[in-house]
Length: 562
Ligand code: GLU
Image (cartoon, rainbow, N blue to C red):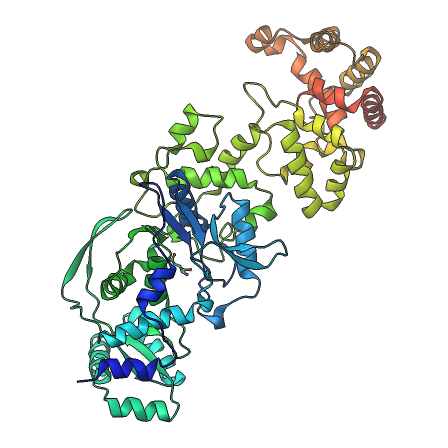
């Protein structure tokens, strides 16, 4: 029998505090009844994944909807995988998507990460002594023990773990070998500990697992519902040889001290849940509520559901920025995926901010949501169609200045002109849904700028060239931009009638063969000359913006080609 008290002193001589001292520095939060404390706890190893925005949006909504707290904790315990600058980029990206942290690791004015709040440090690498204090306590209570292992041995253990995941044919034999190894490790004597420490050998600290994998724990996950998981019987590592905790241990200590009420994370953590429940019990902490969010799926070319992997288009949140999606649209789309009644609510509340939606955990899908660009595009068109001309003009300009500097420069050169362009068809009851992304603007609206204007669409062979010429000539002669829309259109109709193109659409539909065409063809002759395209925004509005001179110039150039 080990002398646990002595063992704890030998292993952690530098730790002088007790958990109680630490608890006193992290007092319970004073929050209104029902307030939820949630967090985003990324490892700074890369970009924000669409699948990461998901749980984070849930965390943000649940915290802020309940007058609680959302905080950010940087889980940088794996220095080898850390990517410099990733944490800063992550915070910036999330802010773009409406995720505002009340507390935690935030960006200071100088762009560097600093702490805000009373429960820090919020970077796990700076919390070493805190974890070690709890680790020492576990050793004192005989719930954890050291295992003197070299890095190479650890590597090997790790690869055994991997093999177990793969479930090779020798799985049973390997599991038994592992169990035997684990039991042998537990037999460590005080002499061995002392001689290893004297020799300066590193150790990892392992939990002394009391579970029986044959037995099941009943558990209620707020997303997955009632589940049963096998108890943990594995002496997993709590502290690595550098004194830095594993995810499991840091999760228990931090979420306890930081007062997290709801742990919202990806379902890939579900298999570790038994370890976490064991830890909370060993440490005497109240278990938080858990919400394990399903993976985001996508359809592959063959129509099969696949996990949206890091390499897939749409996985990296930076993709959306690059493609010109506005964050508001992405957030709206995320909400449609997160709560099954969101779209219904949106129909009833077309003008409300998505944050006014009463987010309901019970309306979340327990299985994987399907990511679909077409759906995102639909949502995006709607979102942009509701924006004011001023907002669209500013956002299109800003995006283009970054991603298409030439076009951006033109938009920025005359903001009033740009604003008038984007005011077309906007603001009414049925706004035009002409833009899906900011990147669409150039193809659709570029003709307003002479340097982007070109005749892209041709007149169909079936039209008499003379009719087109006459239409264009007569139109420029009669054009007066002071006309109101009806007068302007009446003139076009009259031109048509004079050439045998009816403006009576009913009569035309009933007997098209009785006419050369309709006023729609006449309008199209003019449209192609002025915009270069068969489809364009409202021509009256377009001409008001282009001005008399430019309209006539374009029509005359077209006439020269006919
Ligand atoms: N650092 C973990 C991860 O990035 C956090 C999981 C959690 O939210 O607890 O997956």
